[in-house]
Image (cartoon, rainbow, N blue to C red):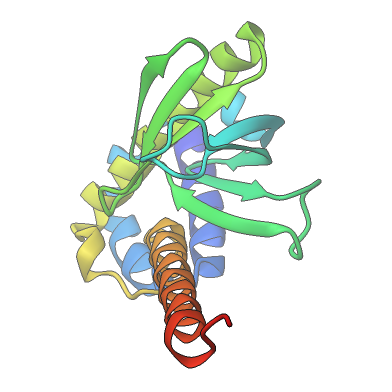
Length: 194
């Protein structure tokens, strides 16, 4: 039982740093101690490695090299070696499945999905195992707290930033398309070539 109580203490400390999820999580932890997952030994440390992330789900050839860090149920992607300045995406992993050779499809609690591709078979095996453990932790968080992802505040760590990233990307593409059309219109009607 000591491993369960230490896990509860660890999770309570983590929950307090998660912000708005903390009060919900802490209030329900004490009544659910017996249902906590025993922390697998491999989850004791973060998993870090270079990988490729499919930036645009509609373009099979749009992959970006990123540095991934998995800490318990949270995956962070960085543009370079990890620092707060280069982090651009964070999700709580709620499910993982193999989607190709050394390729994994991850889904966050909002139902948003993303693909990652690992550089070698050993990395693939390690990441797959740890991501499956992460998904189990996320599922357990929602079961214990009896919350739904859509009811969490937008800034919740369990909501992640994938939805926000995609919304901003879409907005930027629309803005670029409108600017391009406006430039073409100006070229054609305002400044006709002589």
